[in-house]
Amino acid sequence: MEKISFVLASDELEKLHAGALMASVAAVSQMDVSVFVTMNAVTAFRKETIEKKSFKVSGEIGRRLLEKNKQMFYDLLVQGKMIGSLKVYACAMALELMEEDLNHYHPVFDETLGVAGFLGKVAGGQVLFI
Amino acid sequence: MSETNVKIDEIVDGRGLFCPGPLMELIKTIQLKPVGTVMSVLSTDEGSAKDIPAWIQKVGQEYIKTEKKDGYWEVIVKKIK
Image 1 (spheres, chains in turn cyan, purple):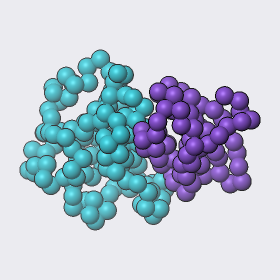
Image 2 (cartoon, chains in turn purple, orange):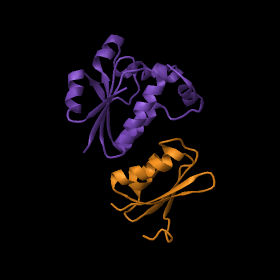
Image 3 (tube, rainbow over the protein chains, first blue to last red):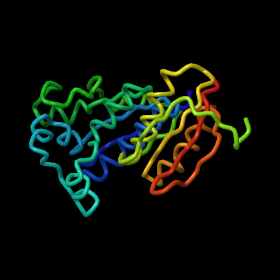
Image 4 (cartoon, rainbow over the protein chains, first blue to last red):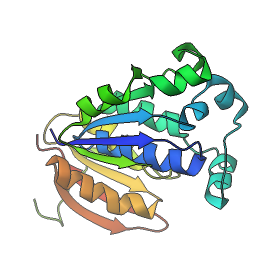
């Protein structure tokens, strides 16, 4: 199966949405997809952030995404997981810096992973950094 | 299959959904239906009307046609595997 991976490193809603959209469509298009959520992107997956919808919006598209109550990035990832082959990993280092475990985050995550572990999983496929 | 004689077995109404909503609705339906089912996907999203044929080609199902209707698109696909 063709393999593709996405690194979500930004907490900007627009970037998270674009990455999740591509990952979910790749997963339903018979591709094996891995998503690694790292750096500030992890904060957008915190249960508290999602509950308050306190996402970092950088422009018009982000504002409209929220206004129109569109499917959010974490919903897109869940959909990709339900229909296709998609795994979502939280960066262990970022969670350590946040002093939190996965219980504080949206249940879309499969597990926490270090960079070496992620690179092992994505070897041989394309990696897109967003 | 002749384009002028397509019998639709299932309508997937994705009108009002944003991309990739109509595609996702098609995928949910195609998984449940038997081989040979002809589905008509309705979409008000123009991007989906272009995406769905690309997806059909990628996964090896049969794309029959796309028609522009009054305010929406109709994409017809047949499940062949």
